[in-house]
Length: 160
Ligand SMILES: [Zn+2]
Image 1 (spheres, rainbow, N blue to C red):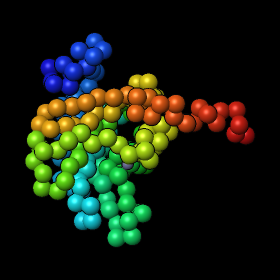
Image 2 (image 1 turned 90 degrees about the vertical axis):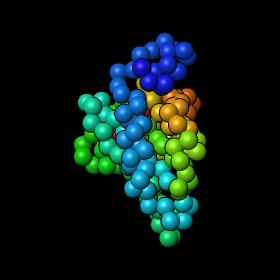
Image 3 (image 1 turned 30 degrees about the vertical axis):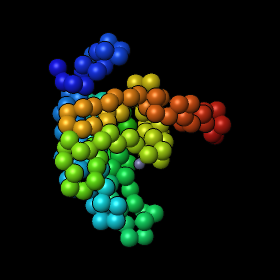
Image 4 (image 1 turned 180 degrees about the vertical axis):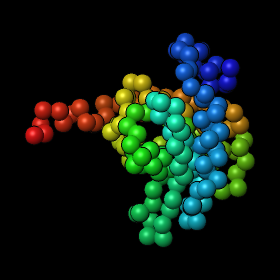
């Protein structure tokens, strides 16, 4: 069992139906493709679909700054552009350029990415796996990171 599994077992007693450690490694690998010449903060994400596929993403910065895209949204947009709409979890790994695995702290998703997750994921069941120093992980549901989030359900009955 991974460290992640132990943490969940202690906090909620639920078992994982996916390879938490493998998803984190995929995020760490995606981080290596980060294009971040301005912040020098490299982020990678690995998004797991309900049918077991993994889409990775990295942060992609821009000289004009605002067109910058986060690793999480890169992964989501890649997946959605290929027809995926059902997601189980996303792992995120981030840290300053050149930092070691032990130096990389938990890297929570920004508010914009949380909102994108809200569009496609169940707040109660979608899990966000934050890679911490070494093999440490922190796992949160979308609802925990975006309480009372606004999503497609809020528009039900208002669209023609
Ligand atoms: Zn973001």
